[in-house]
Image (tube, rainbow over all chains, first blue to last red; front, side, top):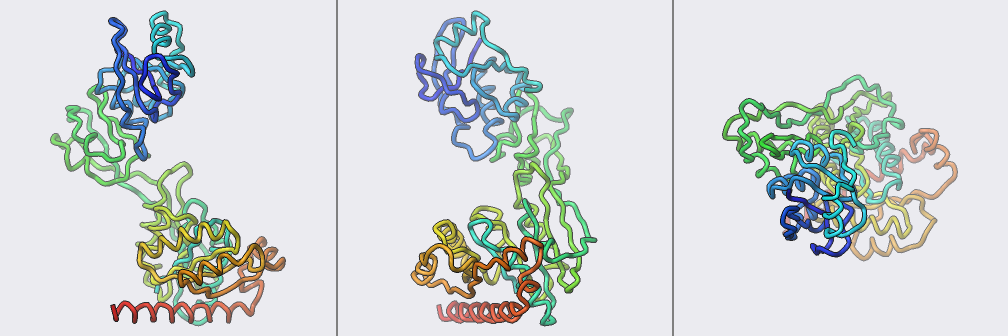
Length: 114
Length: 293
């Protein structure tokens, strides 16, 4: 499964960003292999509509689940439409959070209504 | 003639000045319209007391996707600059509050699956005041992020804009709603207060009038407080100070009761008529200078 974790600097072992729509980068993790790569979030510098744009970006990258601190209402609507599961974490690193994800220790957001 | 009252800073007295100017001019026998463009918090009607009998909704056309025709190709999402249309899981999703109503998605859809449907964002209200002022205002619906379409519609209201004198009360600030409000004005009257806050925002408002190439002048309200930096700035950039309204308890109390400046101080009728004469001269001078260039 492909995970997207919101990040400031795009590194695997530094603290994550708790903002979903406007985080600087995303760390993409393949949970089967543990391979990861970072990509700049095109919505981080957008004037408006970051929530919709970021979900389009993740969907285009084949993401199936995301981990971040906060999700806005537009993002939640779009995540639901895209069928991407949203998990909550306000601290940790992509490394520690992908482990927690695999151990089923993260809380999932109900995307239908926050 | 279209005179816009702007300020930069909020709470400097734009509405008090706009309504006093409208009342003073209406008493000279000119046909006068007063437009409240502060659509997020319109309150000029409290001074003008119009009978708001005319109402029309402000609508914007937004896309509606026919799911049966949509193939999920994503052309609409690609063309949208505001991410109001996204294609997720083969489904096209519209976020109405992000849409600016440009119609591009409808044009590019190869399947003809998008048609435009109206969405109500606010309302225009208008009517005559006891002084004979033709008053109009825009009211943006609560929670709507975009004021500009409501202001643009208000300024297209022919009954109002056909008046000999149109006095337009702008919102504070120096961004899109102000640009939309003062665009096309013959003169921008900037109401400020002689404080660091007033000066800071006056600079922004003045820069905007220069950008739009509109002749401007200043009214210093609450004169006597703060310092002389506003005056220094006006001298430096060649902005005429056309009027000073002193900080006075009587004025503050009167405005708080919903009285116009003319009701508080009847002699201000002459003051504001003279103000208009000065404005007309400034407009004429700038026309001459434009002609020379």
